[in-house]
Length: 239
Image 1: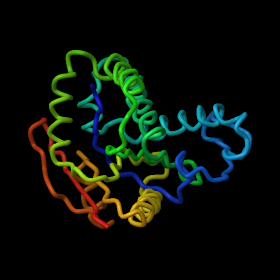
Image 2: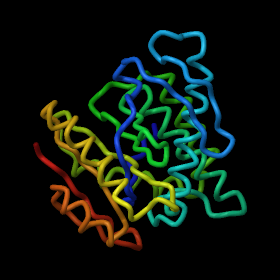
Image 3: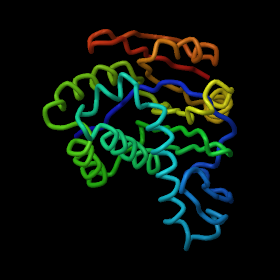
C-alpha cells in the first residue's frame, strides 16, 4: 500500500485558519482567482460544508502546486510528461485527502499560504487508503516509477520515530507573496500549536536554500540522504 512521505520547500505565511480538526466557528470566503464562496460558519452551517470543503481543496491545491512546481522531490515522484501539472494536482489532492482525515489542513487568513500536516501514528481506514493510493499511482506516479518512489519512501520512514509525531508534509506560499515573512508566521503558528501538544515536528526538504530558514525556526538537520540524485535533508523540532 502506498503512503508517500514527501519533502517540502519553504515558502512564507501568516496567521492560520482553523483546521478541519479544530471544529471551531470560522468564516470562509475564498476570493483567490475564481474561488469564491459566501461567508458561512463551518461549525453551524453544515448544509454548505461540502461546497466550502471543495473550494478549500482547490485553494490548497493551487497554492501548493505553484509553490512546488520546481521542487526536486515532487518532480522525482511524479511522472514527467505533458500532464506534469495535472499530476502534481493529483499528488496534492492525495495529500489533502490524507491530511483532511488524519491531520491538519491549514490556510492563513489572507488565503495566500497553506500547509498540510499529517499524523502518521493515526491508523488509516483500509478502503479509504486503498482508494487514495490507487488514484495516486494511476494519476501521479505511474507504474514505472513506483518501485523507486516506494524505495525512497521506505528509507525516509526508517528515520521517523515510533512515537507519535507531526509530519509537516507541505508548506507553501503564493509566489507573489514569497519573501515577505508570510511563511514564517504560518510556521510559527504550527510550531506553537504542536509544541503545546508536546508533539515533535518532522519534515523533509530537497531545497538546500530552505535549510537555514528551518534552522532559524528551531529545526535541526538529523540526516542527509544522497541516494536519489539529489540531497534530501531530514529535519525535526523537538518541543
